[in-house]
Length: 159
Image (cartoon, rainbow, N blue to C red; front, top):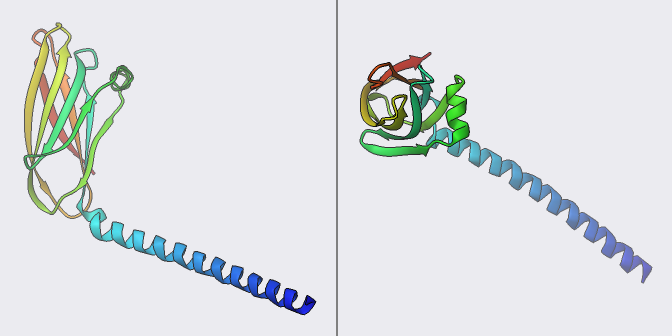
């Protein structure tokens, strides 16, 4: 009876160790599959990032931005008071990160804001760019100057 109990305990312990080894193997293989999936679906050399900043922080109170790449909507953002304050203090907002093939592409931004003269403005800006191998970072800077406070947008590629 004691020998049978010891054998059962030994067998259960061996089974627990096998289960732990299998769980460790599964975890390791899952991590490998996830890494491979990211590498294949989202390769670093196709990455595109778009950032937004304000040049004249008192000229525009940003309400929202919609972004389209090759006429396809990729993001829309409605700004909170805290986000407007952050942009007003020189912050930069990451609008979009995605993947694009190399070649020519079109970026369209639709900007809604209130100008310093209390006029509501809505602007569509189109920017053509060429994606080359590697990560592309585009900074979109909004500006508006007195007296008419018409929004102007400039684009700069970060290296």
